[in-house]
Length: 388
Image: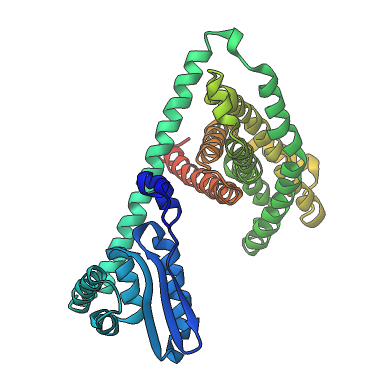
């Protein structure tokens, strides 16, 4: 007996519905329950799991079919096929007349549905489409980066005249993290690269009897390029990833939402101290890298070329102009700003999972190294054209 509550309260009646199912009973398939749009995902799973056993089914029973709509009827067509379901629904007494009419209509519509024609795309068209997608992705990335740079600079210019808003403690802590802790690895790496450059230079110049110019090669290369480039690449891999992981973890834990709820600016709190600390740390690391690289070259010259430190320093003092040092050092703040901005931006772009943190951490390292090398090549061409 039907409860009066179920007749008067549609919410109660909907809760009593039974999702559709297909039960295999020996060689018979029994369809029962409600096949409606509200259970569409469940019905798709029922169809996919039943199709594997359909080959041994001999008979079909639709008497247990409950409520039905076009979404459920389309799933029944996917399970039984349009022709077979039409025959079953047309049999007298198989299902209620209104359900039979609906099933027949859906079967006719799906049986006469033309197969979609696969668009034939040439390789050239596909290549151009993929190139366009990649180009648009790069454009959107640069657009987002420019917007974030503008937002950061606007916040910086707003904070600078207000000393009471300066966050000195995070700034000093970021300098220790990005600068002091990176000194040993930067010095070791540039020393070894300086030794390698000296070996290569001596090997090539020996054929011309000009091994003495190995000193100039090492000095110019580290003062203008290698010192700042190696330090920037190391910080791009070491520090940009740390910025992204830290801010990304804060976003996953909803700490950024808490900061905004308190009426605070995340850029002022999280981005500015890191950006300013990087712009202080990288010039120092660049100077250390220059000295360590030249020291590595001097060690090789002393051990292999009989160019002892006193003579090495005399050649450096005689042939090296101050502008080479200034050219190399002038690029450090720009590289530091780009690395810090990209690392923080990728942290803000983290969605909400640990996988997203890893993906954006990798992306920040790749983008930082790419931008550093790109701007270094542009700066090299500019300084060459200017004669500096």
